[in-house]
Length: 169
Ligand SMILES: Cc1cc2nc3c(=O)[nH]c(=O)nc-3n(C[C@H](O)[C@H](O)[C@H](O)COP(=O)(O)O)c2cc1C
Image 1 (spheres, helix red, strand yellow):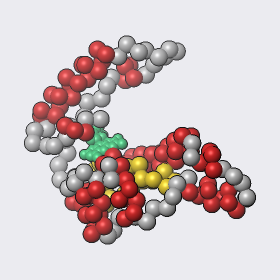
Image 2 (image 1 turned 90 degrees about the vertical axis):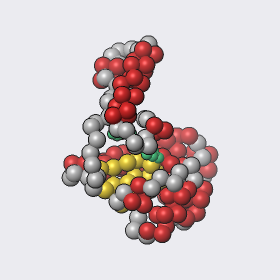
Image 3 (image 1 turned 180 degrees about the vertical axis):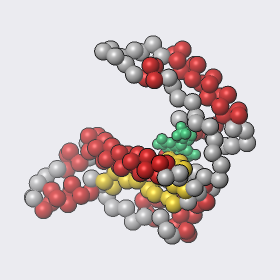
Image 4 (image 1 turned 180 degrees about the horizontal axis):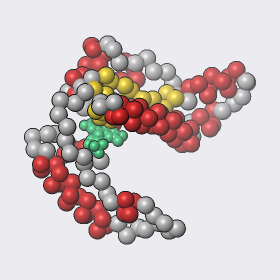
C-alpha cells in the first residue's frame, strides 16, 4: 500500500498498531470468491448456495494465506522482517469500505514487511514431536501447553518493554 494517509486510516481501524504505518510496506490479504461469482454469471450458473458456504470462505482464506506465507519466506530470505496483522479483522467493515472491496471479498489479515531496526531471538516453538502426530491424534496436550506457556513467558520477559503479550500466537 503506497498511500500513507490511507495506511494511517487502516491502522486506526486495525487496533491502532503504530508499526502498520511505520514498519514498511503494508499488504492486505483478502479471501476472494468474487471472481467465482463473475465467472458463474458468465456461464449462467447458479452458485448462490456454495459461494456463501464455509468451504468457499475456507478456500479463499487458504489461497490468500499460501500467497502470504510465500511472500514471507521470500522476504525473510532477503533480510526483511514481517508481522502479520490479524487486527484488520477488528475493523473489517470500515477497512473494506476504505479499500473499495466488493462483495464476496474479505480481508483476512494484513502483513507489514520492512527492514527491522533490531532483531529478537526466535520465539520458542512447541517442540516438533508435540505437534507431529503419527497414526493417531494425541489429545494429551495439557502438559505440553503448560510447558510452552512457561517457556514463552520467559521469552517475553527477556524482550522487556515490548507490547507483545496480547499476540502470543
Ligand atoms: C494470523 C496472524 C495474525 C496476527 N496479528 C497480529 C497483530 O494484529 N498484531 C501483532 O502485533 N502481531 C500479530 N501477529 C503476529 C504475532 O504476534 C507473531 O506471529 C508472533 O509474535 C510470533 O512471531 P514469530 O513469527 O516470530 O513466531 C499475528 C500473527 C498471525 C499468524
